[in-house]
Length: 211
Image (cartoon, rainbow, N blue to C red; front, top):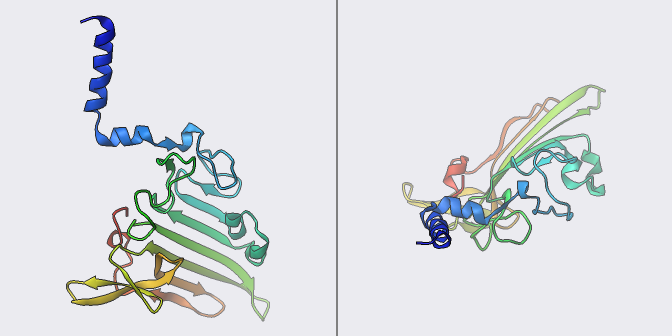
């Protein structure tokens, strides 16, 4: 066997013997590759950008309006803090379909059934009618409706085999999503605790293949 054929055989064997996960990784562009673009057309980088997004780590940490590139409509909330976290089904840190953008619900026709999730944690301060500083804190957990979920009267339901009935996941938002948990605390109003909780668990593992 000559050297050229030997080298070609080694290359072919390395491809055949590579595990599927390795081949999948090789087919996907990463942020580190410098080929994935953001919504504004700029090349994405690892770490936090000037707005507070870290797409590699699936997190935003900054002021509320910075999450929306300082849009005019959100200026009343410009001083409020916002922490967002999400998973790869919501917004991946890879480009596996070759469109130059981070993937969303890759492999699914829509978010429904994808297992996508997002959390928002907001907080801020305000001065009440007596001139006293008060603090508020809001948290919401949002999941993509499972593939077998049914939407009725603004609420997503799934069949619970143990209960033998349809049970509520959460109220609908953004078409394919359900709010499964909301909490709110406010020192000025005395509010503290759960605003909303679906009948099922609010744990991410209940709602799809990508917890």
